[in-house]
Image 1 (tube, rainbow, N blue to C red):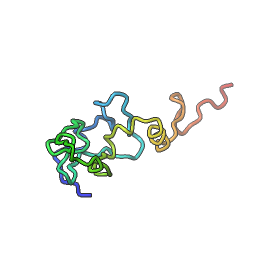
Image 2 (cartoon, rainbow, N blue to C red):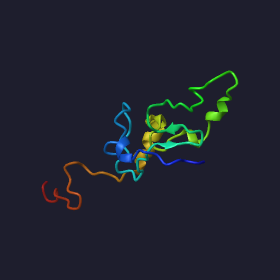
Image 3 (cartoon, rainbow, N blue to C red):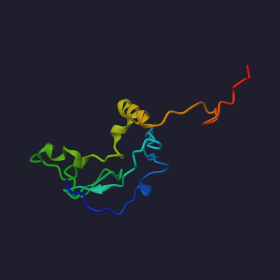
Image 4 (tube, helix red, strand yellow):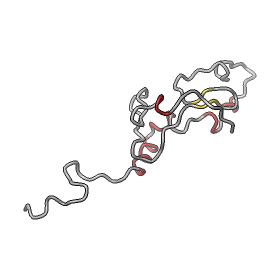
Length: 117
């Protein structure tokens, strides 16, 4: 799979490791998964820019002779800016990658409740 250099950086497409343009998009913060910039696939289609249109896309040039299989495979899916991250299963996957959090009222290394009862 060939990916061309692009003019975007992950900071341009995300805010605090989230996709603010997607309603209810999950946060990747604390998961170890780094936001990736959009890329141009082997067909000249930009993937992951959230504009969903590209002059070279088969969707923009569809005809009765277009084989839908042309749009299958990993070169059509962005690793971090994909609607699939909004599914319950993938949100749970992200949660398993986050370190466990204590109570917001707990000190991270000292048990401050010792001897208070």
